[in-house]
Length: 97
Image (tube, rainbow, N blue to C red; front, side, top):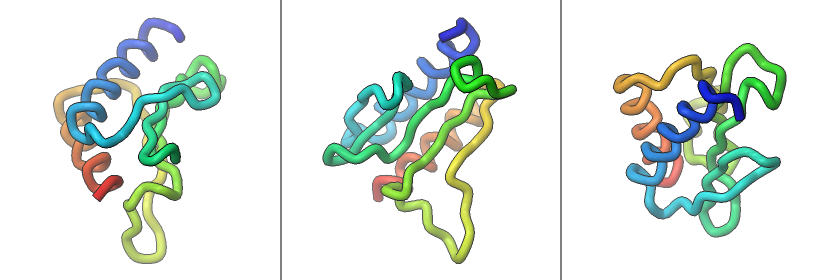
């Protein structure tokens, strides 16, 4: 993983493991993912690996983010700031609630 994506992935990892210790870290398609009872709830995708212009934090259908008839299941990441960390923490807590 290129350095900028690796730094973001490390910060995302720290937020997820602190905010939702019930999630088990694992590799999923070679990228960091976090599972509950063996099922992936959320994952990080490197921009470089997927030839995208930004990294992504995604949530599977196992995440309890349902709100109405439409909700976000993926978020573009260009930088992980304190504000972004707080938002990730809140999303992950909701995803496993």
